[in-house]
Length: 314
View 1: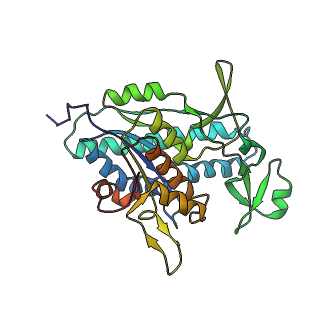
View 2: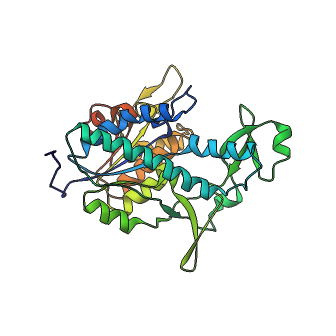
């Protein structure tokens, strides 16, 4: 008989996995590579599930970018809107995480632990100013000539031109009640993939919108709504680093709300990478969360033990 924790009165831990959990720099992103990369965080999550109620959120940047590239390369089938592509990646990555986690749980001698991957809607406001100023680059890289022929806005990057879409603030997670109920019954829940499917309310109905939601801010929204105890963001660096990429760079072991706000005001963190992570961790502590951590994918367990990563304090 395999072992499984009978105690469900455990602290709730939300783990937000960055895109590098599946595809690392320099890789082409084959399914074999993605499954191999997943073993690193998933093995740790399996161990932690003995002591925590677990919710896993995840990014989808490379995967949704690949789907957009496929659409650009093929004109024999109708193109799909962005919210449908996000839903597809939620299913794809959810399957990969769930099957990897099931395998790691069995390796620990746990014959059964309920798991579920949940397609997740995230409500945004149709009045969000982000819709009038789309700045989030997504999808393939185009030449200037190709970009001029596109029907949607683009932005010039270091490598070429890319499509840009709005990145509105998450207002609420539609399935928050279902997630909380599953969590309270000791399910490991995989949700809010790629920031969730962005929708706006139309009466009692929802309508998908052409946007992407930051995964860390959506995870924060969920953490507040299910009253999580600990919020951990796993990424491709060891923690919060000041003066990143310079000789003066310094990794911080702890970070107070006041210090985080000062560093954000000093533009220490890039808008598309570390800034939303620091914002999310800071807001979680401000709203009464017990602990927030930013760490590398390899050091999830040791960061929870306070040995690595950056821990946010009041």
